[in-house]
Image (cartoon, rainbow, N blue to C red; front, side):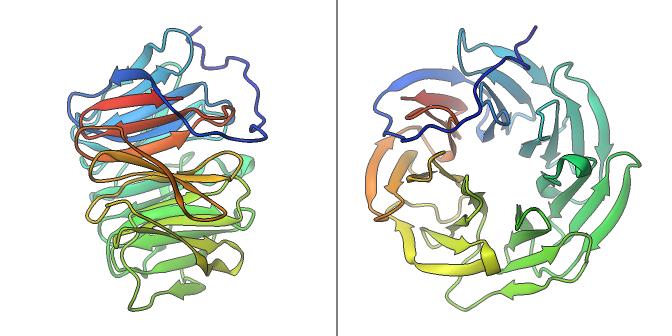
Length: 320
């Protein structure tokens, strides 16, 4: 067995602590790593995608081997997302293809394209709607697909710039999108007109978003070197919570929450990883993680202090 269905706990830790040392380095991709995501619920495996057009699955425990490499994209892979059970995942690439993969066998199950570049991709999170996904496109559209038929089911065409992120909120009846047009829009599933549009002159483009474990907060990485926080209920900006100190202008650095919601983490353009205290918004810790941009980071779901970071130096690192 490749360990994909290994038994691990699924409860978040009571209290998280700050990582102190480098535990492991993977030489992951020949060119930069674009993104790293953890296996749903258990977090015992990690999926990475790279500028070398490859996607790789890694063990986070034991020998920390590369379990599988998924080859098939012709250009850099920009986004990856697991299905709820981790048995499949979607990838979006600059080759204009979205591909559905079998995690265990490595087989490419389907491919989807509008002949435009997909910037982000997201499964519908409900267990009974996992055959649906949405993709945010370079041509300003959000496209809804049905995996079973291979057909486009809906087009959400209101943004004025490329769509960078899609996040489901409110028990998955709606989703938030962010775009190069510097706005956020809220959509009800399968209704092609946004029901809320947030844009004001002080806002900058938001290339990366992350939902807290509680689902209550949406952290938005903003191109003016700060992370803004929106309450998902009614999507209101929380003016008390602004996280800054890092340099991200021009880069889609991932930000993420610790599983107990007590910290926020982000990489930055100088290769540093930042950890902020959620309550006070103060920088708790910053450390040099990568040569070049530290583009991604994730906190292991059942660990009090383990995080992974990835960078344009082609490396993924585990910190504890």
